[in-house]
Length: 461
Image (cartoon, rainbow, N blue to C red):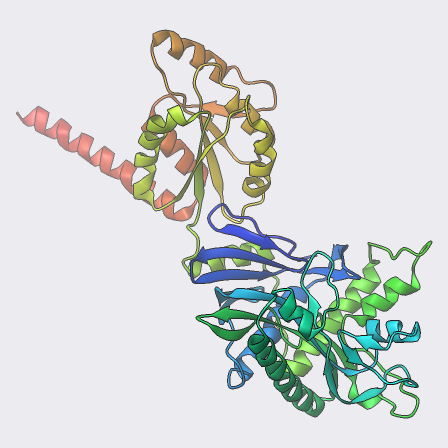
């Protein structure tokens, strides 16, 4: 299936991986949010991806962000891919503002067990499941490894935020819930409950994360809601939750969904997108990673390829700089690292995860002196080309290094190029990028023409 789990690129630093969203640093004022097709339930990420889910969540969130700027500003800048948005950097307030219009879900499960106070809010006795509250209530929780209910008083006392900011968050949340309730009602949807998250930019409270999506909210079909029997028809992630609950074994919910449940979940996500946004959801046939690569390239966020110069020691820096000087004029991303095959080789799998799964084509130039174990260790773990370009102190060092660099173990296809300029060009050509191929064709023609010209001058002299 054409789904998105994670994206990898050495060109943009990943700063956080959540259950569904990954954040990348662009600069001090902007980050990139990638909304994956991962799905979580009951505080657990399932071992399945739901096709088109990430694009649905991203599209719905940005739809609401644009519609509610008159109530509160948000961090959204622009969407550069169906799964990716650029957002303003904000200091997050680690509190989820959960607004509830009905007694259902986890709140109902607690209520059944006799609980009557939720995050400091007292609920009357004698209520039934799916009963509508006279007015929406807010039950905030902390954003920690395991979220917990917390009262407004404790939010201030524990230092999560100030009393003034919390009151503003509460006021904004109720306004947003009112707007969402009214608009969704016109579209045949009941906004049952939802969560809002906030951050601070220049001292001002802004909206962040997601808004009124089937992951952050509970939706019911308005036409199916029976006010007498209180029966409901869910239009959100509840379909997944209920399947998991119905298929528990020994009290443990499954971590894998069957194909038919995945297909139905994807269909439901697309349907709710079309109802909310009011337009047909576009399904892309292009491989999702190729599409994202092209979008990031077009947005100027990445170069079309990378070359990583990996040194065995900081002493190899001068040699590595010479290689880099031959790469710089080709407008390629150059990543420089120090990794010793013998002293901190445990870092190689971490590097391999990024390089092997990178969106863009890449190549490694290994720079290590004497007994070159680095090139072999890299080639054994990487699915991209590895070129040894060893530095030499003297003739003895040269012979030892050349022998060790050429004599790689079996199934470790590291090549060896001695000249720094040739190593750089070999790495560039291995990327097989059309733009570079055109440059090299022109360079080759220029060299031929200069030789022909020199030959003529010599013969005519």
